[in-house]
Image 1 (cartoon, one colour):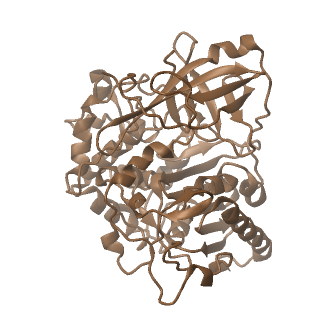
Image 2 (image 1 turned 60 degrees about the vertical axis):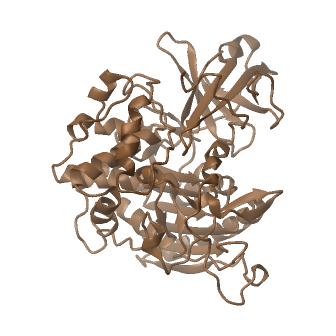
Image 3 (image 1 turned 90 degrees about the vertical axis):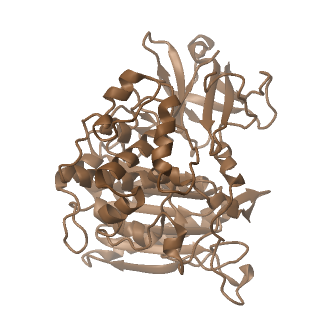
Amino acid sequence: MGLLDDEVPTASWMMSRRSMLRRSADLVAIVAAGTVVAGCTAEEVDASSPTGSIGPTDASSPSASDALFAELDAKIRSAMEEYAVPGVAVAVLHNGNEHVRGYGITSVDAPVPVDERSLFRIGSTTKTFTGTAMMRLVDAGKVDLDSPVRTYVPEFTVVDQDVAANVTVRHLLNHTAGWFGDDLQDFGRSDDAIERYVASMAGLPQLTPLGSTFFYNNAAVVLAGRVVEKVHGTTFEQAMQELVLDPLGLDQTRFFTDDLVGHTFTGAHDVVDGKAVLDPSFWYVPRSLNPTGALISSARDQLSYLRFHLGDGAALDGRRILSPASLEAMHSDPGPGGTIFIEIDGYAVSLRVRPTAEGVPVVQHGGDWPGQHSGFLFVPERNFGIAMLTNSEDGPKLLSTFFQDDWALSRFAGVHNLPADPESRTAAQLAPYEGRYALAEIGPDGSTARVTLEFAGENGRLRIRPLNPDGTVSDAAPPEYVDFSRDDHVVGASPLSPRSDFVRGPSGEVAWYRTSGRLLPKVG
């Protein structure tokens, strides 16, 4: 039975892929949300007032930055109210001036003001730390990005033996390995969790030819973490601390809550009937997924990390962390492009490179775990970077304003998104895209969830509807509509709707729908 077989259905609606991830909420939570302050109630915390610091590191021109920072504060406060996000923290670097602040509260049940040191999960921005650790090993002469993975992990295999023998470290970090990637299995809390996860990859099927196509691949990045583990000779977490976290002075960025006792955690919130509701069960992340999405961090540490990536590879104290060439390799020369919420030129080493209308590249990542969502973006040519942390399931709606739209990019960096004006298509033009497309995911318990979507032409657009396991149309959510902006590229009706695209097979046929960086094969 394959991962996309009809026998493993789910009635979930794919357009919010996070609903599939929510199965992790059934696992035991490992941390209580928030730090209780005696006598402090939700009503007594002013959620609209930012807390933190603002100040220039280069006093040459702070006034222009200050005006932009004030505009940013107002935009964040407005979005928090609109999208039921209890707490936000932001870090910005602009022309040498810094802005790091918290807004709102850590938890609706035990409210404490969010500040620059409040702790959030950063989700998949963790992948960029894994990439940074790998580049330290490259600089040390211990890893070659273009060597086969089996040079470092000889026991590694997937279903396609040719791919297992030839996949390189670079393929892992630019998301072109080509095998099924949404494997979120939990292998416990012991030191061999990542090793056991990698052993389980023997059952992962190949979806696209090695190196040919971008699609987001969590499993590949876990394997990259195993390379770091084996080459450094320690657990992955210890390797990360020794190679990246300690050298950069990131003392509030760790994988385990035990290492951050005494600091203030933000709680993960669901949104029910338009209101944020604390759900501590969202917090847990399997240790096997640490390389791909489990770091905990603060806005203050994210500011330091931004400063590192906007620099020349040295830490604040001048100590060399990466060579300029290795840092540049993380920001340029990406692999195959596509879409992941917005058009991208492709992934370099763990960071995606995004085009702009002005031809100035944007380097970006972000992270999603239930109830904790983040963004991370910088523009090296314009000396601008921003990171933002949120504690709500509606966090992605807020983040899209700053990381998908070009509101922040246009103001702070003077660059804009590529245009994506909707175009009506004839029935004949829509016909090749019509059909059924499927998405699968392996959950923490090893079970497989599957979603099937039906695409049909309607009034010059494509209508997307979820299907029940028996093939009938689901009433779990209303249909959504997308318009073509150019051949094979579509965009939703809202200005903040993500951009997606269709991927063609070797004979030129429409074979896949790519959304949120995932490939959904056409199955009927």
